[in-house]
Image (cartoon, rainbow, N blue to C red; front, side, top):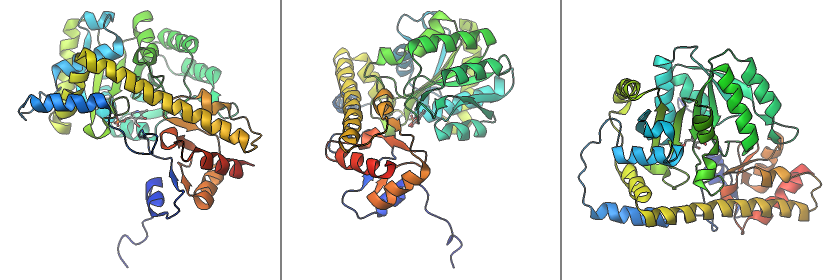
Length: 396
Ligand code: PLP
């Protein structure tokens, strides 16, 4: 027998690809699909690509920290143009290999320079890769309570209790908006409480912002938590930004890492060390994605087109949430499915059991991750009724 004979197929995608049922649905992937179930390239991206192409630029290496104008525009998008630390030159930035790369730079930097305990607390549950990224960066991971299984909503009291119980000066990872996998975000008031507690405990905050604009359709609104922490409470946060979802630039691997320091001179010292972190990992980042984003964010017309398109994506996602919830009701489901429409972003944490997930795959050819997470992006007017009917069948 072959050496690898007993290696089982991993992942939901493989099982989906093998399935021959014409009604099959893939609800595992974290990428946007249009109303016909197809990948979607934004018009503003197509236009920016054309502009970049016509500039006939060379393919020289970018600096270690990437394209400077891109970094500036990304930081402005996240922190706001009138951000105090931004305008005081206190924010160190570095172009990254999308959100994952930014998390990895941050993890590595913390592991090397964080003066306190090298342990990062992440929500329970969180995006699975967080654990792996931080472990490989040399950090230990811990959990804080986040999701309440009983309400399919936020366990705010458990979360606050945990944040209070951690040693002063701990590292806390927060999802800035559209929490993955649960789709459950704190309200602005709850964010204010979380920020105050973290401030009084002297916790260090690492924001993961993979969905700015994609969550609510409004990039400013989605930056509320980050800006509140920074501007009201003076948290010197670290930030991982991704342009995978909000600009549909998944495969371009374009993101940005930032870190707020105390002064311009501290920023210079920190920036020099960020370069030393990046250099042995991949020398310098790719140029195309950075050029595209720079073009969109610096061009009034393309930027406004982007705002319209990202709002359109968020709207479609929301419409599919409503359609699924209505469909369940129409098929006679007696469960409370309110969380389908109250959760936001790409995902819905349905609350169904691993057994029910198994039945959906086996009996209905509907594939999702074992934790019961549905990628709403995979739902469209053509398959939502089949999903509602099948989901009702396995939850009767
Ligand atoms: N962080 C969270 C919470 C995510 O959901 C994702 C993508 O699914 C990422 C970060 C990073 O994605 P990327 O590296 O493609 O930007």
